[in-house]
Length: 329
Image 1: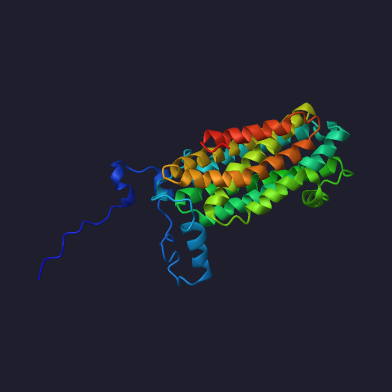
Image 2: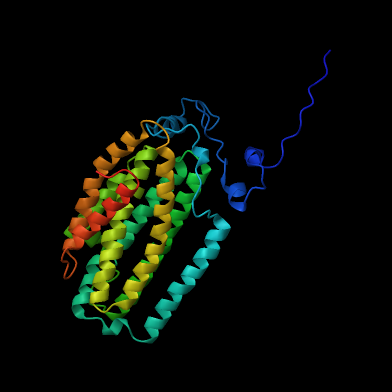
C-alpha cells in the first residue's frame, strides 16, 4: 500500500491565492460565487429540465464568449455594504432637496404650461424606469459571473430608488395641481402618447432579449444611454429653462447612478473584447438595437418645450459613449 499524498488544505479564498496579497472586501464577497455554471447541468438537475435548458441556451450558449467571465471586476468596487453607505448619503441629499423646495413653496410657482409638461414627460417615467429595473434583474439571473451579477443587482436597486422618487413627486404634484391628472393619467400616457412609444417599444423588446449578452447590449449600451441623454439630461435642461430647479437637481442626482452604470458596462465590454469574435457579436447587436434607441430619443425630445436640437444632442451623446467603447456604428 502506498502512502496517501500529503495534501495541503485549501486556504480561505483559495481562488484568490495567486495574487499573493490579502484579498479586498470586494474580492471576498463578490468573486466566484456562482455554482450554476456547469456546462451540462447548470443547476445540478436533469439536463432536460426547462430551467437547465434556458441557461444552457441563453447564458452558456450565448455567442458572447470568454474563457473566464469571473475575471470581471467592477471598477467602482461596490458591494452591498459600501453601496448602502454611498446611497444613504445620496438619499439624504435628495431628501434635503425635497424638504428645501417644499418649504419654499416651489411647486406652487411652476407655470401651468410646465405642469402640463411634467404630467406628460416626467411622472409617466416610473413605468419606463420600472422596465429598466426588470431588465437589470434579468441580468442578475443570467449573467455568467457573480461580479457581473453584483453590478446588475445594484443597477436594479438604483432604478427602484428612482421609481420611488418619481412616484413621490407624482403625489406631491397632484396636491399642487389636482386638475392636471397627476397620479391618474400616467399609465394611459405611457401606453398611448407618441412621446413615450419609442421608449415603450425599446424596453418591451429589451425585456424579451433572452440571451444574456444581447440583454446587456440592449439595456446598458442602448436603452440606458438613450434614457440618460433624452430623459435625464434633456428633460433636466428643459426644467432649468422652465425655472424648475428641483427637477433639474433630482435628474442630476439620477445621472450620478448612470455614471456608475456606464463605468461597469465599459469594463465588461473591455473584458469581452479580449476574445476574438466578440467585437463583431457586440457590433451586430448594437446595430440591431441602436435605431430603437434613436427613435425613442426622437419621439421623447420632440415633446420637450423649446426642444431645439435636443434629440440630435441626445443621440450624439449615446453614440459617443458606444464609440468610446470601440462599438460605434
